[in-house]
Image 1 (tube, rainbow, N blue to C red):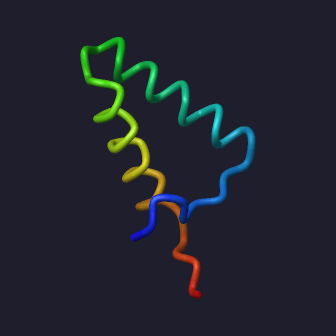
Image 2: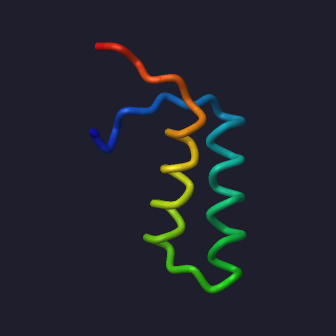
Length: 50
């Protein structure tokens, strides 16, 4: 899976940022928070057939 394989609306991006910030406030590292949120987004986003 490529790193840049998702296209998100501004609202989706903002929600992702807020979730990353929440995880970091709970003590999760920035990198780990990004990985967690990206995995959640991928699980909830239909795959693009290329």
